[in-house]
Amino acid sequence: MNWFFAFMMFLFSSFAFSKGNLVLEDELVWLSVVKDSLSATLYTLPSFPEEPVGLRTFRIAIGKEKGDKLRQGDNKTPEGIYFILSHVPEQQLRVSKYGRVAVPLDFPNLVDQISGKTGYGIWLHGAGDDNRIAAENVTEGCIAFYNDDIVKLKNWLVPKQGIVLISADNKQVNDVQDRKELVALTEDWFDSWAKRDLKRYMNFYSKNFKYQGKNKNAYENYKKRVFRSYESISLNTTTLRVLSHPKYAVAIMNQSFQGDDRYKSQGRKVLYWQKEDNEWKIIRETFDETSLSKLSLSEPNLQSLRPILTQKP
Image (cartoon, rainbow, N blue to C red):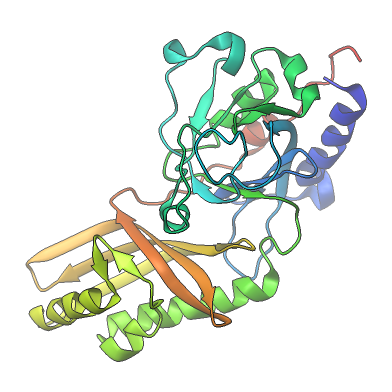
């Protein structure tokens, strides 16, 4: 590993551990991958208006070709907001190429599919040979880390919990004004749902919205039937978090719903927001029964992220 880079990363990561004797509460985390600086920084993901805290920055290598991934085989690293999937078992990996850790992303996600993007197998993985990182543009679209670094990082990349935001540069990523607007909109969306105000509720959705094969009109009719089918509903959300990207944004939260005594659900809701005529609209949404859980930011866990500075230059 380049000694100077390792030293600078040590200084950066020390900020989260030592500034003002900072003590961090358990929190969600996200990984910001910035292609032009060949860096990946692990941040906390607190509720707005709190600002994320950087926990550690890693040096990376990316796709052989520049630009956003558009199609299978173009050797480009995608740009967008992605969720972690189940890790690839070590015994299935070619260690000489991927090291001992591989963490898949959900590319192409629902927004990518709208754009017609194709491809599969975008991973965060080890370099195999650490010298590959110095080549910078070396993968088929994946994000490669030094082998020791991805081992340190893997426990922070929890399936369906961890979020990876990949950008060409750091401009307009997680913009404060965007986050402020998105939090307010998401809270208003939730309120309209809780009050079963169908007209207001549907106004949050894009004209191009689709859900499980239903277009916006079909979805509105479906929701009208659902709203009318219950005498009473109980609806709650917690752990609302937002991340914004120049292409789109996501709002995630834990959601619990009960309709009369007939139906109940609890899990993770994801809203994908995108600008439409300069207004944020929901373009896609998902729900699954895996609730969001905050990670422990205890001192031992944070210490495990520290770089090892015993390597020779």
